[in-house]
Image 1 (cartoon, rainbow, N blue to C red):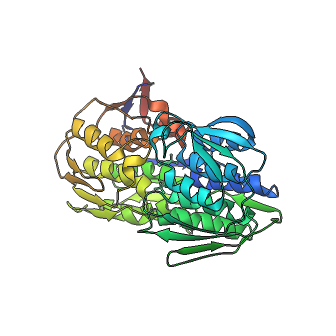
Image 2 (tube, rainbow, N blue to C red):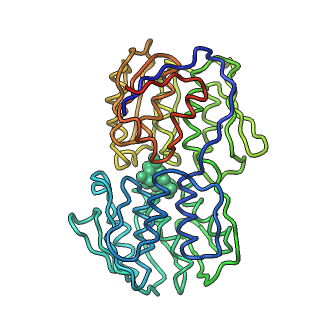
Image 3 (cartoon, rainbow, N blue to C red):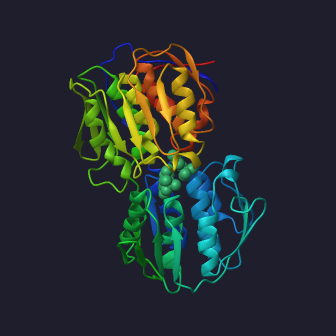
Length: 409
Ligand SMILES: O=C(O)C1=C[C@@H](OP(=O)(O)O)[C@@H](O)[C@H](O)C1
Ligand SMILES: C=C(OP(=O)(O)O)C(=O)O
């Protein structure tokens, strides 16, 4: 599906959008509910990634295809490793077979899991025969993906002796690890995270608990992008959000003050307001703790005609696509002066955005959604726009609600 986007004629927007639940919180909650049937979940994400996770958890024999869902791949690897009597092959899209999983597989094997590679060593698909795991200590590199760590933490309370993790190297995407620990605490599991050691105690049963998933902050980022590119006075209200979020991407509220967007917190909602603050020509952010908003911020800076230097982007090359290369290619097509390394991205301030450029999305939902706000400044095409369903299936409808004109070609 190719879309042509035109921003609203009245650039001073005022509207309220309800965004689906966080896919990160949903996929953790689904796994915990599979381990502890007394857990209920509210406001679960309607994303593809949460759906494949939910379906995957129901299977006990045969092939589980998780498509593009990194968290489902990593979390189900931990889950099936501990499920005695279940035997599955976990696989996914072509890109998933290029996303590394060896660190997690090695950690699980050292605990006694039975996992083998079906094709290439270190990558999905993998075959897992569930085992009774009693070992309680494991050490693993922490600088590649926090999802490996969360996968181990999520199964930890269901293990006879709990788990102690030693994290080696600089820990990346830390808020996602803290989110996992916070959810464990919410169901009554004892955890500690001191220095580079995380301990989780064993728990046989959980008393009835409802986990209420907050809406997705990474999805909110696109409205921050729209607001930043809109006229002063614009107000967009998003629900359901809270000030004390488990999601690291809630740092958006702070980051976007640099782009003239002020956030106020109401009851279960946030209101973004564009002020007339002058945006600095140079902006630097370290996104090692919030990698999923890098694309949004890069596009916002380009749209505003200001420069940025984004660091801490070392995980972007192994996500749905190589996001650094993808941003380089697509922003260059629009006229940006951009350079990237393996872990940084730099945009030099420029004037003007080329019109009616077709943005390629590389099977990456965030490429489609991050570029859409540019319709506030120009008209553009988005190729394979259905990719948004990975995390935010209602995205294009929600933009229509904001009076974006969206034509399917
Ligand atoms: O645990 C999670 O829910 C996630 C962790 C992050 O991955 P990395 O830890 O690989 O950076 C993030 O990019 C991803 O979208 C979701
Ligand atoms: C990186 C992402 O997802 P995952 O790793 O779960 O596929 C993302 O949603 O930006």
